[in-house]
Image (cartoon, rainbow, N blue to C red):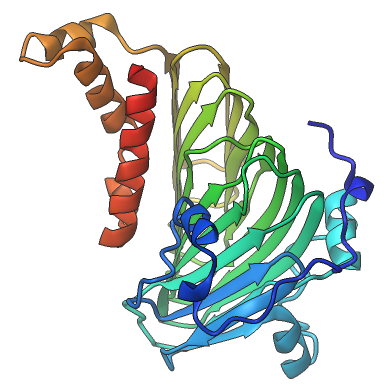
Length: 386
């Protein structure tokens, strides 16, 4: 799919109505959001935000340790957020950032207050409804010193056959000793073009963990978030699980810059194609010592498609430990035979291998979200067995 920004409507004419309770959304919208990990009936959340097309239609906050605002409201309240807004991303980088700078539909502002450890996740959803809609959002997340928060971010379209363009910019700031877990799940469609731009900075002793899950078709996705570990002892980890059905074009990766002593970064990806085409990138750069970094990408081919892995390691210092592991292939016949020898039939054996390959247990997800993802994987297994 070629990206022609001017072919999409960014005038904000198609907006959603304000809604107090996400459970009042149309049933089919709820189903689409559930495919993006958003259960609108889940009450075990610290707060919730929903953007539909060019309008924030829902905002609810119940944990006083978090400040949750629409980005436009935050810009007004904090005099333009001069220390955070457009500080890690360059509006002149390319046509995507230029458009996002010129047209701001919305997005969210999250501030986890100093020392507050929020046990329930914060739920955010980006939703597009209508054909040829362009959505441009900009999110700011600040985790103050010693705070901890988990954001569940689900993105979806109302119908998988609608043509749409999503421009999603996010800037993360993790202060000293803070911890941010950011889980993003996409449920787009075969005619949707997605261009996220993400950057973050982590201070001394801070932790950033990103979980990215894509199990459904997407027309054209390109993203390459960058996290800078600028404080001593800071850590970052990217976990990605990507399934590319036929019709998907995906260019995804993650970049970590180890800029301070005793920092550590990991980029772990599992890519499965059932006919789609995936480029999976990873970069870890060492600019201080001592530091440690590891890249790992494993690709599994089922029924056509392609996987191209591009792992990159860079160092300009002595005393660093950087490593990478990459592998692409099909399910090994000996693995099938091993499981069949223990009583499984061939389809059950293949499903067991796929389930293990796409294991998301390491992501530390809430039980409800884990269950929803497991159900999607089972659906995938059933489809491939047909």
